[in-house]
Image 1 (cartoon, rainbow, N blue to C red):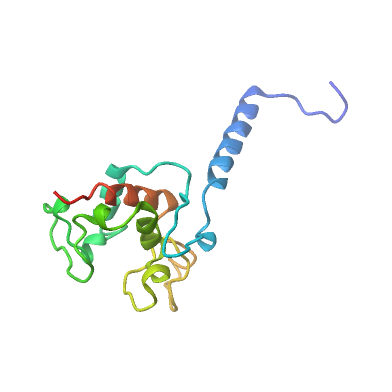
Image 2: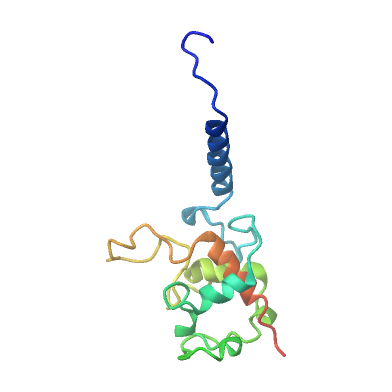
Length: 159
């Protein structure tokens, strides 16, 4: 062994590779302050990983995540209580908006509809003032959850 060299460890090498792989996966995620919404569209995936419509359906209905039903009615989730009437009915959303438009709306609706909309941005750090310390510097949904919700919304077509 050379002076000053460390002993090679196969488990340590695999652990190092796992860290590198995780870093590479995270490096593919667009940061919330770097999202390129242009002309009311976001064509680029936030993660480079296709969204899962089933996971998106869960996040959509989850009152602690998307909480989309607080403002939107959605016949696909008719088994859930208390659909809101503030936002548009989302039945047929995939027929009204493109994937790029839906992604932009979910990421930061204010960049699409203007500051007058009450819909929050789900993947932005621009959330206003007096944010509770627990939530400061965090997004409502992760980048992959946004992709999942968009994939779910793309399943909502008119009958």
